[in-house]
Figure (cartoon, rainbow, N blue to C red):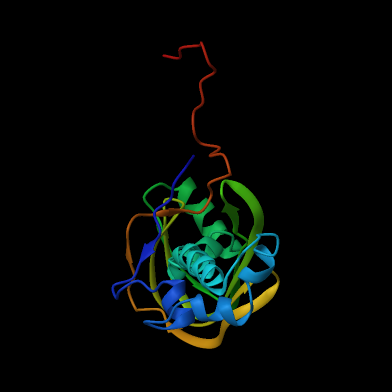
Length: 213
């Protein structure tokens, strides 16, 4: 498995959690307001309101961990598929050591995730919580640096973000039109490969069992 290093802003990273819920807020309230635990525990005998709250809290903790995703990492994953960046990546791959500065037109990046949480009582599975997370970036004024087929920097840009979190098909939290100003001059944890699934035509390959001198 190939792992790519995500972007890191010069300002503190912003998790989906803080962008969606704000500091100090959690998911216990939204899950309780939508009665999320009730249907999952319907088959459990002798259940109490306290048990429902305990399950809601555990579900909120698991989903909250998932919301630790960095919004900049999600945006970077979308940029990998941008045609202008891929073209620049091929040109810099064909000319090692070269660098291109690419200004992108206003565009949208959509990041959709569908994790799930299985719920067990006394070792028996009683249900599954289906979670839906959608993050949509509306980006303008983005200037990227591409070197050796990798995204190596982001110099400027502005971004509006829509975030929606759902559970069992119902929206439990959302924020639309939030502003996220991309800092001028991104620091990178490492280069982000833009052609991960595309073979390098200039790379010499050796068949297994054959030595080449």
